[in-house]
Each structure stands twice: as C-alpha cells, then as structure tokens.
Image (tube, rainbow, N blue to C red; front, side, top):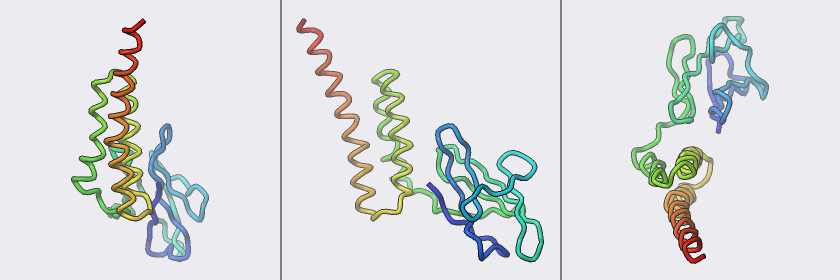
Length: 156
C-alpha cells in the first residue's frame, strides 16, 4: 500500500510513502528507489531542485496503515483517515480470538487485510463486498470447520 507525497520543490519527482510490511517499517521512495536516509529512525534527507534541504519523517501508524508524514516539521496528510464503520468492519474478525491461538493469528491477519482493502484503488462497492465477505465469512467457516472437526473426533 502506498500513497503519493507532494513536496514543494520536488514537483518533477515521483515521491511515494509505503505502508509498513510484516517485518519492515514504513519507507519513502524517490523516483522508484529508496530515498536517502537522514539522521534518525524513519527520517529521510532530500534536496529540492533549488538546493534547499528537506527533512521527511515518517511516523508509523499503530494499525499498519499508511504512516503520517512530517516535512520540515509540518505534518502532511497522505491519505484520508478511515471512517468509524471501516474500523468496525475491520475488527469484526476479532471474534475469532475465542478460537485460541490459530483464531488470534487468523483474526489479526484478517484485520490487516481489511485495512489494506479499504485503502485499495478499487470501486467502493467492491471494497465493501470484500470486507464483508472476509469479516463475516471467514469466522463462520472457521467455527463450522472447528465444529465438524469436533464431531468427527467424537465419532471415532
């Protein structure tokens, strides 16, 4: 998941902010290659076309969403915040927590997938259908499979 970042003085360049991956933090790319690192964690040093330095700091999100961005100390919004109902549908798979360790792992994976779906560049109707299918269908299938497994083991 990535978003375009527009900075004054870097208009001719493709600057993108990437959301964190599973074992990797957020990153910034300039024209498709990693941006030059600055001093500190998640800090990048760029130069505008007029030679002025630009410091970009990525502030990671708690939910593996797109990070917030500070350019020379000024906060920039790279993506609209998710709506309350999007978070509600995203956390619904947490009902799988009752299913033990496998349920917890599956619930967290579904939550992260749902956030990525909400940020995807697809029609809104498709987003809602995908998230509803994942949020409702996977827990139902999980509990149905667990129930059938218990029935199968009791019969033998």
